[in-house]
Length: 75
Image (cartoon, rainbow, N blue to C red; front, side, top):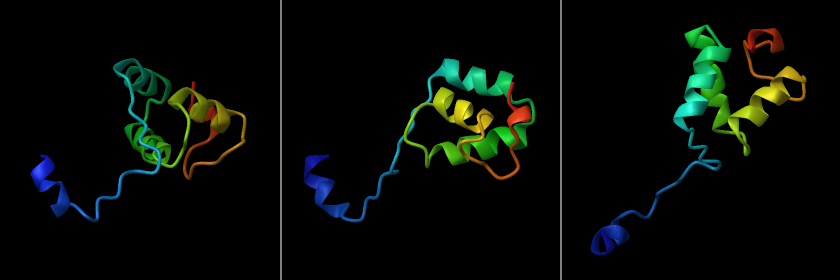
């Protein structure tokens, strides 16, 4: 890999690379029934610096907004 690393000059990682655990993925599935809403939240999570739990809590508390997601959509 080291000999090839110079070929990757324009590598741009995600600003916040949230790696979800299996438990968090199950939680997301159980808390948000609609798959389209799940994907909106999952996509928006990549712009959020903290955990999935904190993200959902802030949506419920109306501290942040995600298009198409209402606090009542999250159980």
